[in-house]
Image (cartoon, rainbow, N blue to C red; front, side, top):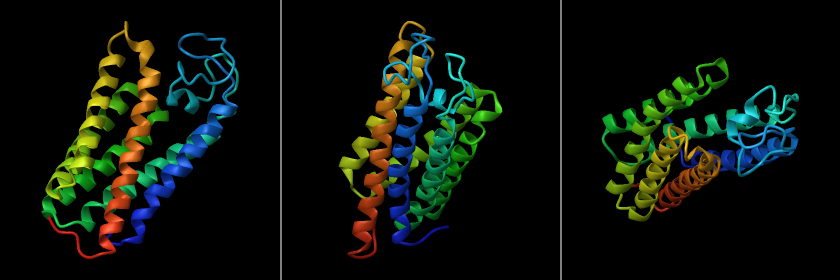
Length: 210
């Protein structure tokens, strides 16, 4: 696994690159959303991230934003994989917990890579299960380190993930899901980056203990 202080900056850089590629993908998305199939362009209110990954936009046009979206997803998967490999092995926690977090985090990321292969809901659910285990492990690390602010932020992220699932499986509320999805993405990415920067900063002072 990865035990290196500098490597902790890579997920932060990856998050920035992902956001840039995401934004570019929205600029080139032809149009169509769950609210209006003929709506021009990308709607921040009604479109999902997954819409940017499709070969054909909802309005039937070729999706010119797809290459940016695919590149963004690849960058994000690699960045989060580094995060789950690096952070647990740069803090003093039980080896079993380190391995559990790294395995679950990597399994979640590998699952996401198969989103374009079909069975969208099944793959998302599988990635979600592994992600929940890794997520819970990260929160336990933060509690052990007594980094309570980041731990509370983690619980807020867990609540947002649960809210996403509630909206997804409730047809009456699904119109709110695209907005909540973007808020969840942003909160999660800022949380991940904050953890990396916190560990990086503390490692510069000395060994991180419990």
